[in-house]
Image (cartoon, rainbow, N blue to C red; front, side, top):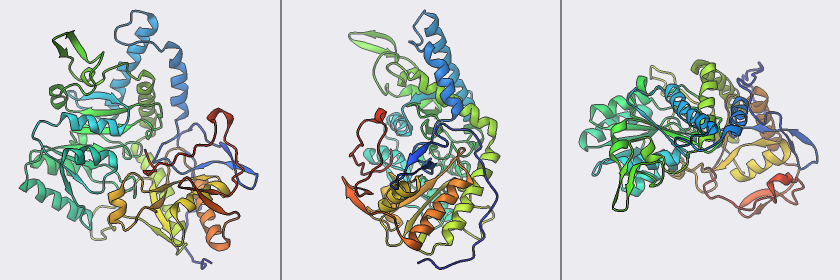
Length: 457
């Protein structure tokens, strides 16, 4: 049983900032009832903005080949692609000489950049990274720097490491996908540049929650995914300095990446075409650009305020449950002049319960979607003292409300107070209600039994 604690919890109603597809979606419970889905899994894949879905529906009848088609639909699609490129560049504060390359996602973008690091150049990355910003460098045999107990010490260690070892590129996350803690990217860029290195920021988590500018921060490259930025249509982007991208071999050899092809050799196009071989994802690029436009209308300050209010509401609720432990990379430095910045991501453990069991319970009995596992950040979870059981992660964004957060806290309070209503079992490595009566909609086909060891794409 949970002891009654007095904790100050904000009581005001917080509404969504922008309408998203799926808001109010009815989902079944094991009890046979149905409730509106509480989506607290934005950090894995955010829902599409309603404006994005409408934009794609408008563009779809005009979908055709790009750059070489004479037909009217082809001309429309070509304009749509290139205007989308310009829109994404504006949203991310690209410099005049920067290049916007459309990719599949953040992982693809960072693998592309790894392909473009000049021969012999070394890369330094932290041990707290998502696998997308760890595995491309690990495969190259690059240098990993262990984060220190505090953020300030970590920055000092980075400075010292770059002073002692020539480095071509520093690769860091903009915001942790596990704890939500935001890194000072402008300060990181200044440190890197002071030692002659460039910097790439994995902005998959940062860009949906904070306005990010290449020009203002001094960052050399940004990588992000549309499916995190309310545009889940299969496009991502790498934005940054042209020279490395023009000098590297084509990332994907194929049509569209060339100027001239002969049987004895090929003349490759300049970036971005050089690295966009094959037919481009026009609709994905258009969706990503529309999401950028919509987020720009809200403004960075409003985004931050909305999420911080929800985050503090969640933290206050979790603090009233002694069995719950919230994860952090760095403790708040009370002596630091600046206030810690965090996006809408909170991960936690519940004493006595497997994280996967908690996620199954929240879904089956309360219609709440969260993430569980190690969040494609195995080294970080290991340094936080967590093994394969992992943790539970709640994450939110522009479509989230105070009601979503309150339902999560209430569901955990019910579990710890009176226990679950049904029994759970392991099915193909995932917890599920015994004899789960919830039916998957016909359009999706049979319930999948595939279990990913990573638990996040």
